[in-house]
Image (cartoon, rainbow, N blue to C red; front, side):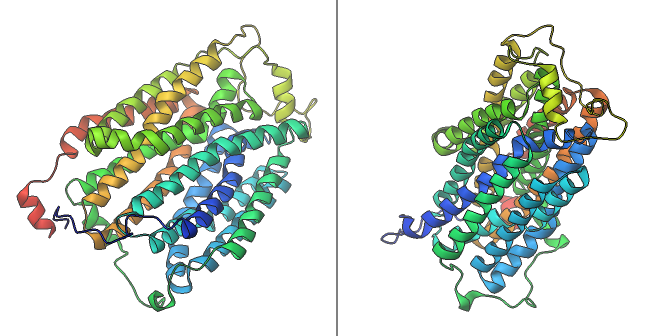
Length: 459
């Protein structure tokens, strides 16, 4: 249990060793470019093969669902064999997934590509383990924060690359996948030649040794005052926010008729906001308000973003052409009995009768509270969790947090896709607003500090 007493700092322990940190951050950034190139494209890629919203939801769930299986195993293997070899194996799986995505000619191959990538998806968690290896308790938060900044920057640069590659290839959806594979190959080469092993041989464990990774441990952690509610919050809020992320391209296709290039612009805008929030503002807000107030404010801001998004008017931008969008989404498909091969498109597009800047402008405004709320919540929750457990429990508890995030990300697109298909494109965002509103109502009690008696029980 944290006693609240500050230990005297040792010389240099507050200073990050950037010579060891920088290669990891660069590798993470290059690695994430592959992912962020694909994100704006994936829903439209599936729609081009005639997938409906529910099927696209399951496709979005494939990667995080496989991560729930693969990431803990890869993390355990990294404790045994070292970080570098496991990171290389993970990156090789990502490369294979992107190559298969590039050659995909059916929805089945899209699923196979995402499953392969998800099963080997330990890139970020292994990079976080490397950061933990080479930092001290005093500077670890800052080191891990740099990974968050790299992630946000990837969300800015990746969609720009998507937009460029689509523009240069005549909206060929296969090309961005191969570009993503190229960045994945670069990250493998950088890992092989630049990254030094961070996990000492004398600390590597035998695979027969077991730590407290069990259902009993999970239940015990969830029953802890405040910590349990924080973990519950991160799971529920991510169901809402994960659905927002995964279905955004489908939503903009239905409401505004935005193609893959248009969606890239939206994702760049969201990325810029997240970089600003996580790279600069969140530190100031946290010091001024404290994590508990920041979490509650973050929920309110996210609710606002969801509601404004759900009310986006169905007014496409001035350049919109229904024929051009349908042609792009059916490029390369020649399904039997279709003349022309466009009638299998399952997503309803807006008419061309009422075009203006209103819809796009409305959505860009809606993205501000949505991205700010989403950008604030996860780091604030994890920061508060790390403050409320003992030093020995931090890794395991944050591991539970990461597992709950992956599980939520696998549920979110399935639930959201089914709601989109059954009740319309606004339904997932109204549902997300409702979930966050319930969290906010319960947070008044759930985020209270435990009293002395409860603290004694935790010792």
